[in-house]
Image (cartoon, rainbow, N blue to C red; front, side, top):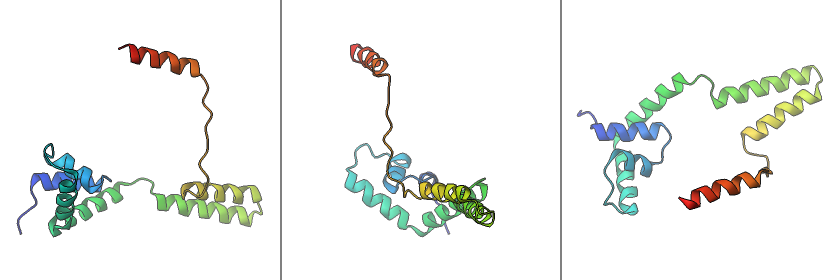
Length: 131
């Protein structure tokens, strides 16, 4: 079987790194004269290529092996922390583990952050606008 081309390899690496198919295609190929619909279609076709899909899977597996700390490891550690806190009858420890797990999974409502120092922002805006 013929190996994938350098552009296909670049596309596969971009996908393995977490890019969308369209962004990976734009990165690996010259798309300056392409319409978005064309890019989406070509990226989808490329991803349907068995050799490219296999290479993406291979690259993702290599990245997973290199991962020092994964999301799954975080979840397992927090579950273990919860169990230890439960055995020790520590409601604070159990609540802390649950709170962190909820934050990891996006269960918490978005937080509004109050920023101060509006004067500095105005000064920066004036400098940018003048140039």
